[in-house]
Amino acid sequence: MIANEGETINRRYLLNIGDDPSKVLEPIWGYAHLPLVPLEEACKPLHNIISRLEPHIWVALENSKNPSDNLTQDESAAI
Image 1 (cartoon, rainbow, N blue to C red):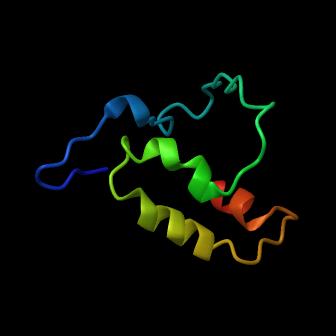
Image 2: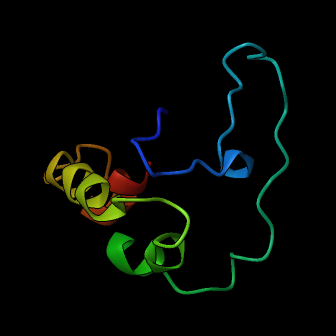
Image 3: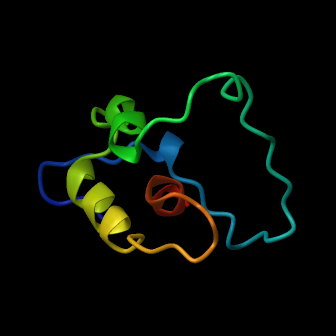
């Protein structure tokens, strides 16, 4: 990801595992007890971390209008 002029990239939140496809990632703990919420609501805490997040959410939701995998639109868009 390339930052535009005046923007910074927080590299702690970018992960490139393409070079090591056999790398095992740890599970994300502490969320199983939380209710499922729409993607837009789930992403609210990320707005301070990821610039221009809204258009990415919109595109993901638009591309997931009719998921064929028995997921909801929000679940499919999140993937």
